[in-house]
Length: 102
Image (cartoon, helix red, strand yellow):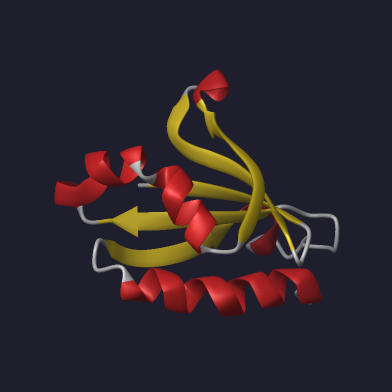
């Protein structure tokens, strides 16, 4: 069962990402796909981007995250070798979301 905070975030985020023509698709990963998602789980989203826009979108990761809700804080995943990963903390609902751009 998907926790309410995750449902709210997805319901708000998917339409926003569908409006961006650079985005080809969105997939959930992590505990969502292993059916281990609970109210304390982060939300791992894989955002599939048109290759011709990938580099530009990596430069705009922060602004994209801000467009998805109230992003309290974010940082890239360079410390784990993932420059295409933005680790975010959103509020209302309070939720840790990883956005991975592939």
